[in-house]
Amino acid sequence: MITGIVVALPEELGTLTTKKIVKGQCAFIADKLLVAYSGAGPENAQSASELLVAKGVTQLISWGSAAALDASLRPGDLTLADTLIDADDTEISIDSDSDWYRHSKHLLSQSVAVHTGRLAESKSLVSSSQDKARLQSITDAVALDMESVAIAKVAARHALPFLAIRAIVDPADMDLPGAIGYSLNDQGDVMLGRLLLFLALHPLELPGLIKLGIYFNAARSTLKRVADQLDSLINFNHSNTTTL
Image 1 (tube, rainbow, N blue to C red):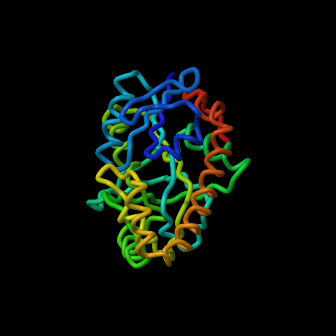
Image 2: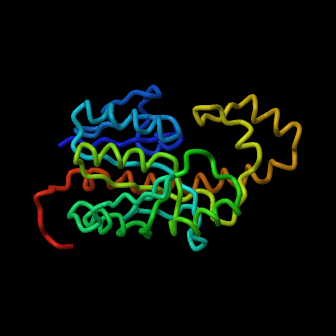
């Protein structure tokens, strides 16, 4: 059994491995653990997922960070989605009654608090707390990301087990600094030159960026704790019917 993990950002990749993986490609980081560095967005995530399937993976994980839509979630909180909802408001079920899902929830709960619920898809960056509140009212989701739904759809097409493991960065009431949207390119990468130019023109943005950096580090810390348990998580025997 080979597990495939899709990560969108280099900082998220760093919570799993120090190995350098070229964007759009994949590499084994452990025996039977194949990681694809997709880049941001659903199209990149879909391509990376299909690449993993072509390489023979038998289960897929969406790994990385998310934005909170539920006001109770704080930076560093871990979400394990039990349902997904895409940008067209179509629900995609995760088999939360499966042995793997229940095993994963039980295992991860030993080291972090695990929050379940709906994970919504956005095809672009959601920057404002107003937009987050609007999406929460439409989707009833607890969190939001750009890649998990695309990965889940590939898993469903190939009848593969799927998990979405996401740590919260920005809380629901946070407006992202304008520097973030300005500095992103079409692939979702932060362009340092654009970021520095924006900060030079808008120096009052710096405290917001520092706060966001602190929040992102909290999410990375959570993902690193989860990564320490990956061996037990991915080597679960799907034929095991023991109730946890």
